[in-house]
Amino acid sequence: MKRLNSQLQKDGAPLELILLIRTLLAGCKEISFRVSQGALAGVLGSTLSENVQGETQKKLDVISNQILKDILKESGYVKAISSEEEDDVVACHPDGKYLVSFDPLDGSSNTEINSLIGTIFSISHAPQWMEPDDPSAFLQPGTQMVAAGYVLYGPSTMLAMTTGRGTHIYTLDKTHGGFLLTHPNIEVPTETKEFAINASNQRHWEAPMQNYITDLLAGEDGPRGKDYNMRWVAAMVGDIHRVLCRGGIFMYPFDKRNPAKPGKLRLLYEANPMAFLMEQAGGLASTGECRIMEVMPTEIHQRVPVILGSKDEVEACLSYYD
Ligand code: F6P
Ligand code: MN
Image (cartoon, rainbow, N blue to C red; front, top):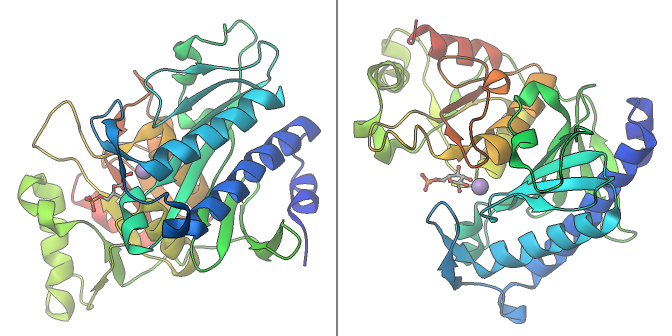
């Protein structure tokens, strides 16, 4: 089976980007090990602190963030990082060529139930004019990403990644510590009968999403003319992995509760990297109003509505917004 390195070379990734990705993944392998130790290492449960978005931090959120921050700061390849678990941009090396954004441990409430969790990341070029502690360089649309992916800590540890030449999925071979290419050139089926949404928020959705979900639930007798199935992992990384593997539509839509939070998911750490993976696999990713990767961020922790997955189904959903 092909190794990660040779696939990255085949896809034309420059050497320094390959080295950066390998460094980042070394951190993810450590997270994978720490996570697998669970209660034995006393890493489950919450800390007493909250992150900048007011969410209680799990011990593993903090540990994973520290692992990635340390390894990227030391590497010399990175000028600055932004993380879901950091209030501000973290300055790294003044000559670093890249910016890295990450959600160190997505779905971390699943740690308590030994269910799916993962690390989501994206990489873009650091502008030369930029001071390492300047957040404005992170405020560029997702179209500027040069690589994005996630590492899923499940029964297998798997990596889904794109450098803009298709989406590939690798599996960590723990006997020698390498990621092997197990699912090359992912093609998300264009049609699906599976959707993922947290239906407990239904009363807060806008009319287009209300109407779309009503029609899905009507099944064979409704306007869509087929019965749908619903899945919700409660970790975006797990839901997106399923959609990449067998198709589907995943939504965390606009929510009327709090205008300052037009959705739950973060543009830089969650929506953009998953949109890049999905588009490179033939799927679509939209906010309901525009392509996710074209949203111009105004602040690093910005949230956006997310609708992504199988092309025909996303288009069907978006037709309710027209
Ligand atoms: O990071 C936010 C997140 O944990 C996502 O991974 C996941 O899709 C979502 O929140 C789950 O939210 P809810 O609490 O609505 O199930
Ligand atoms: Mn997350």
